[in-house]
Image 1 (cartoon, rainbow, N blue to C red):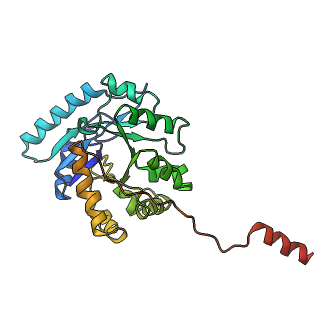
Image 2 (cartoon, rainbow, N blue to C red; image 1 turned 90 degrees about the vertical axis):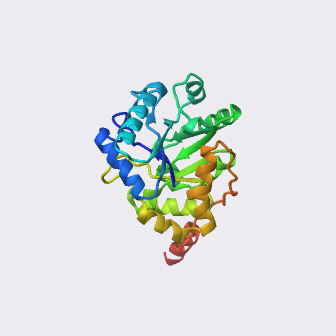
Image 3 (tube, rainbow, N blue to C red; image 1 turned 60 degrees about the horizontal axis):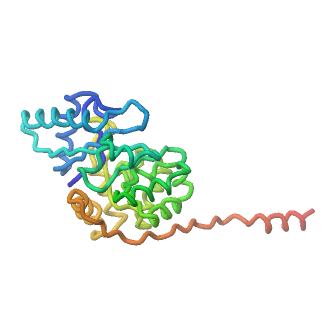
Length: 267
């Protein structure tokens, strides 16, 4: 398997604290069936972030340690980029790494809102030949409230990466429910661990994969787990299914007008 979202590199963000933890995470990846991981440290424009050259140096040190210890995990380079109107500029200036140097860019939104420039950012990336891959949208408060916000962004040309731990309820029930909704409505194209440590946010995915198999078909499971990640690494186009618009379930409570009429009749 291939993980497209990981904070396995030591000491570059809020992920792995040191080389020892990173090596332990690598072993857990192998135990869980992963053979390739894309390291995606956070990049925040005008923040304290490691740019591409610095991350590349850390990655090379990590690869040498993996070889030294005989750990056969392939680790590739990228960033998880906090949404910004300057993403295209930062890519061109060499500050940001796309996913394995492909056209695909992992983009993270704020947890409680979506920037007003979101659609423009997607348009500009596509115009320059890049494809935005939205990281864990099931954790965004606006999308939890209205999944069709994501539906519209997909129609604009964005792709979606969901966190496997979301299916286990690790981030809460609302996020778990939203993850299931997005899967059932074809609004997910990739899956990732978003692993940050060898503890509570480790790359252990057995339980999540079992839940995933109970939600989607075997064909869709293979597409998300094996086919799409391989196509991405090879910088090929992803053939995505059309998303399905979400229709919220109607509540059994009385509509406001009917309730008002009942009250008026009583009094």
